[in-house]
Figure 1 (cartoon, helix red, strand yellow):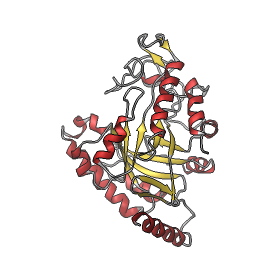
Figure 2 (cartoon, helix red, strand yellow):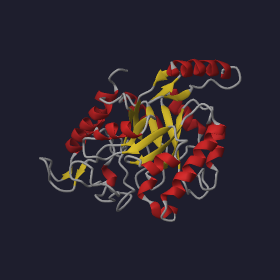
Figure 3 (cartoon, helix red, strand yellow):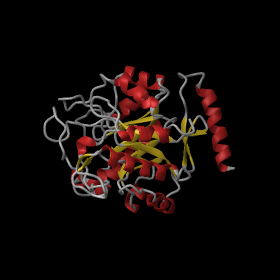
Figure 4 (spheres, helix red, strand yellow):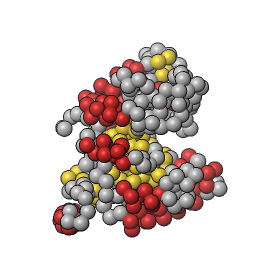
Length: 335
């Protein structure tokens, strides 16, 4: 009955706003699920930070090609690590029938960040854009207490205050955060205004345990804000040869996605990391280099090492890797 009343309320609100605002999909949270226009929404997502060859700055010069590849793979949601201020980019995403998860960082030198408070200007400007799925605060900051005077309470309070401000500003999109693995009791207690808990989860090729762990500590929706594997083996292991290895990435991606979509009663989906290789992360920006290792990376299959430049399901020239076709096979089910 509780869920029915909420859905009826949302239907009434949706009908009312159609008279006063541009037509937008209404995103809401009911129990453990994310809804779009009163229908359950499963995130078949990808993390997207397209940096061209030789650069270290994000560019959308290949956006149309990228969106078509994503669409062909069954991707419905794109997670970006900083706001997109170009309305044309948002329009193109919307025209393909996709949604965006827009992330706000804590300290980005005043560029739509939480520290300066400028993030709320972006929310005000784009809250009626149909491409928005929800807003997201931070990205696995729990691994970096040094950014918050050694005390994570400083971040969780800032995060929660930002979530409350968004709620007062935008009634039609939930607020999430991207936590490094399972949040602890401190994060959950201070972060009470968070609607959806995203988690960056690297537990080899078997994330399924986190779903039962989450079920025990919270009744809110969750999704995997990051998961996946890179296509480079630092050592030979488990039958996979050392060096570039698309099969290792594809096999791990298949196992991870199967676990996620077998637990849709708890998990609202995933944004696989990531769409394209990032040559800017280690060594020369003009070459692909092993290294650039991430913190907390021992759970990355199958060598226990995160080679940061090899995470794409496409290469930097957008040639699909083996993992792309795994994503296509799984995401396209039930379309």
